[in-house]
Length: 324
Image (cartoon, rainbow, N blue to C red; front, side, top):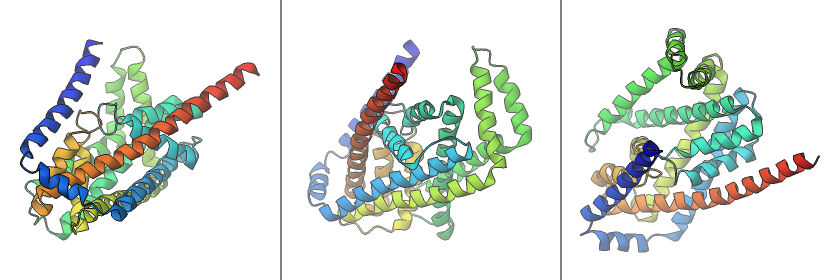
């Protein structure tokens, strides 16, 4: 209990501390940032929100493909609902991807296979993270790393190395045997067995190349839609930024948002300020981060309504089963 509370305090302190720091650093620019936000073009802003919602549909399509690969029953509408619910719970979970735990839990209630549901959501997230790096690597290669953004090329290179290692661990036969021995040494209840089963399920995707390729292609499409959302946010503020820069920077922002915080709050805004300021100005960069936060709030509201519906629906199903 103490450990759980400490982790909660760490998240709150991280987010609150970073927000306070950002406000302090931008204290002389607050008036300009407010002016930029109030001058925002509503047509571009509404278009950005609409594309953001479309992005949820595309990542839901990806998740359905992964679930189909495990012969788990998950319709596209259910997948869309689960992803909206994930956005809602990202506000309360440890990182910007913490809502995946709730998505997996809800999915397991419809499929009656908890391990496969959790590992499928995990695999869906892994595919999404890989597609982020692929899209970041393309403009990096096209520009030969000559960008006016300190350390960005190095950060992306380190992430590519890290994911190459993860790819080896989850697909190589020799790594499978070593990981199995490692997991089975864990004697805390059945935790070792469950971790090993989850790992084997993910490892089994090396024999499902068609599923992975299809999910990866859809994921690349979904990330393009997401980056278009960010581009529209910039346009709404009168900044005609090169969209290639967005493809390069936003994957790094997304990875950094997975650091312990309240749904990535503070970390995400700080990363966008640091990485977009050299090319768009700090006022525009921070204003766009606020618009993105607003967009995430809209998705969270939809997710909250979806979770309420899900809860009522599941209760109704259980009541019917009980009275049959």
